[in-house]
Image (cartoon, rainbow, N blue to C red):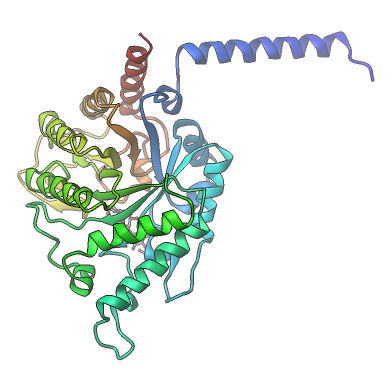
Length: 372
Ligand code: G3I
């Protein structure tokens, strides 16, 4: 085999360019994933179609190191009929995550929404008994945890179980079927199954929206304390962070919630972040709801949204010791569930918006502080 000089010099130049790029990257991260290293995991939520879209998958692999299925690991997707499990869509995300060395978050076991009616129906067509519903919950959790054993690092065990004022969710079919201890039972089951599988390191998470509202903060803190006093494992608290661009909630309110949650010994996860920019509408966690009092939101392209993202990321960086991960709920604006809210850091064409760069700057600054 002969190698001519030209090809050698091209090779050498290539190595130099690559080495330079690596060196430059080592000093100055240009993507979020690299900039967040050492601070917290940085995640995104993706539907299955993202993995056959070249631009979307490129963004996911380069900017993020944690993935959540937007819908594909929910009960209606994984067990639409009793005992008939479907894992294919979730597998697509898990395989992508493994290929690019990303962590995976499982969303979600127990939720009042996107759970088929059969879960709550008895054989006679009447309401299923507590025992039957608990048995179905355990079977569901065991099947999912077994199928994705070793591949999922955290699971939302219970999702959206409190009202904003801290009272238990009024219309939860889970609460109706099982009783007041339904969340405790779900966490006990998840921990038991994790132990059986040797998956004790998998984080068990409580996840909810409006997690900055004082009534909800108190209720969640009380729940964690109660669990811990009874030896029920709970590792992390997921704050969905469907927020507004007009300083709502304000930084002091978010910070007060961080302090309260960190005080429980749980990790904090910012689990579903997006920032609504649409005036006259509130991002409630259930969707954009008409609210005429909401004014002063930023135009989607404006620097105001970039500043809002920077302000909240500066706070995340400040609390990086308590925060396990920050996950954005969607790739670009046209992928978001908040149609018209233009809430994400990439626009409808998947081009980075000014807020992408403000998040990058915030992370880079945080990383520099770490290295001092
Ligand atoms: O799969 C069907 C499809 O067959 C049908 O043709 C299509 C027609 O509309 O609907 C498809 O289902 C939609 C599903 O997303 C998948 O795209 C549902 O209608 C739609 O309601 C569902 O919305 C999801 C929503 O959860 C459901 O509650 C959003 O994508 C998802 O972003 C959103 O995520 C939730 C979190 O799980 C929990 N926290 C709040 C967050 C925002 O609501």
